Length: 45
Figure 1 (cartoon, helix red, strand yellow):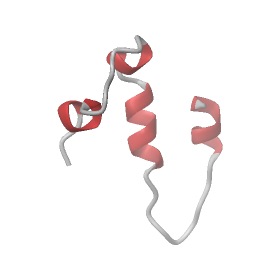
Figure 2 (figure 1 turned 135 degrees about the vertical axis):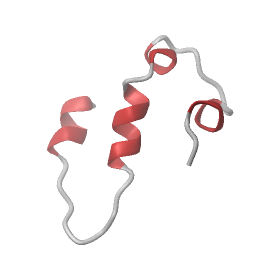
Figure 3 (figure 1 turned 60 degrees about the vertical axis):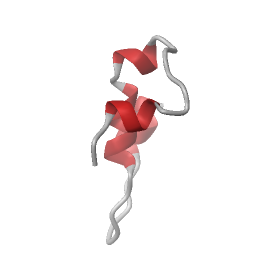
């Protein structure tokens, strides 16, 4: 998944690829310690 996100290219529009890369680097995510509030608790927009 990390490799796919790194290689993914779209020109002309914003994507949420950087968000997904950041999420995949989260120790909670890697450890399977997430629930439906994970994004709200871990990331502020």
